[in-house]
Amino acid sequence: MKPRKNPPGNKNMIGARIVALRKAKKIKQNDFLAKLQTMGLDISATSLSRLEGQYRLVQDYEIVAIAKALDISVEELLGKKK
Image (cartoon, rainbow, N blue to C red):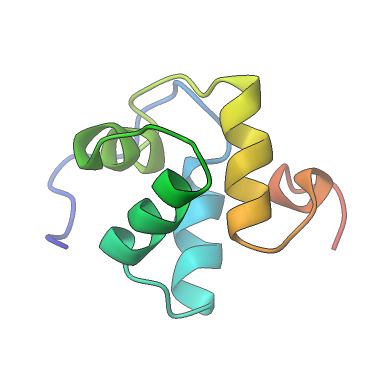
């Protein structure tokens, strides 16, 4: 994955957390994308990149799937509980 050239956007509050959690678990973006897709979340690489960069809004069902794919609670993903 190329480093971002632009600063993060302001469309969501979890994009940066997703990146941090994914990297802490040593999951590459493409592997994470594949895992989300096998779980039934039909999301493109561009859409995931924009979500992580906080350039796109996140749907409620995406939050649930992302938390499940990262093996964490929704609360932890939202930064409310560890």
